[in-house]
Length: 109
Image (cartoon, rainbow, N blue to C red):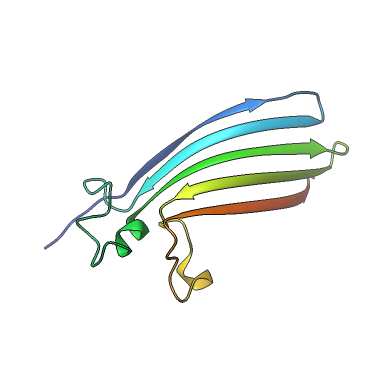
């Protein structure tokens, strides 16, 4: 019987530049197996090992138009593919280093 436990965490810094503008930076790490942080033990090939972990460095900004509406954007620079959803990558996420950009508009009740 084989047992493993996942592991991960993050640290984030926020700066409220003005009441409307915010900036932030975050580093997070995810490991599918806490005892195999480089993916070498759980992988069937060298390329597959990147699916066992992810290190993510993020910078982002947010703007509040008023008390209800806001707009946020982030840029992630990621090493590893553990956080790349398989359903969005049917041929596999093969790039060990990749970039993700997101934009979100939101309404607060």
